[in-house]
Image (cartoon, rainbow, N blue to C red; front, side, top):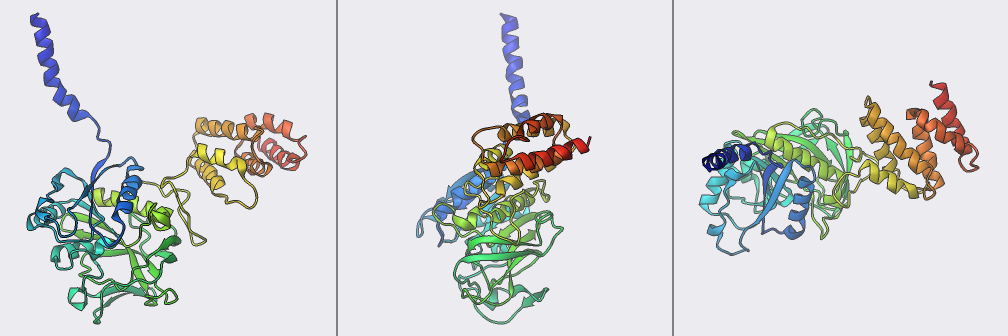
Length: 404
């Protein structure tokens, strides 16, 4: 009996140790919302989905009292979180909450300022320094200069005028300004963003701020300044890091601005930078370029297996997104013989299936012609007699055999 009691005592002592060794599921993240001139009930769940999808963040949403409510009961413990995302534009917080947030940031807390959160708290000096630039809320020259690019030159403009403007929503071209920042490293120099509000005439303290990307506010949609306005920014405030995205106007289902792969990826990368000062996430295959917008309607990158399943119905008039995913997957497997063989076997399975289109099989034959092994050679021999595929199969077969 004494031995049993001793074992229980030892296990009880070890439990805190094992609990301490348990790996966290991700950086604990707080999304603050509850008041906004935008649809926060649509945007906040999408922000959570986008960040949770990475596996790097574990998000919870906290809502403030309604407009006009008792803000003294809004009292989050910021010290519990590695990252705070602000999807908020409403009543001022209490002095106690302001101080707690200020202490959190200056002591190294990570922050993401999302879209209309740069409209919030026009009278809070420290908050405006954290956001770098903001709009509306009676902001004028008293709150800081306009900051923008004109003919590739950064302009600090102290002229008088309102702070904050935008025209009709539209798709627009984003230009990456700093190519070697951790958030933007590997991104295209120019890429198309989904239908969104293009914020312009933002102004503020702009201290310790880097503009990572801009967009040209043309006059055709209204609200145009005919200059390149900041879209993505980073700000350092004492030990804290802030990522600021002016993009992402939400519709009921997130909509094209939040479904845009460019918005999703830069948010994910910006959030990681805000927490760690570095970015480990790779730029995905479906990041847009200047040729057009790429939407992720379920807010996540398509998998190799899904692409192979989707490509079965391919015809010439459809998008090659699934093929690009397959090519990206193969490229990432470079040097991994076992992984490449597994991919090859899966592709050959689609090639020999009865429910894949002829056009889909032609695409796969082209890919197998340069990465296939003897496994593909045996399958291609049977396809040489297929009237629909014989030319492509023969080409692939000759190419593979010549490479031996």
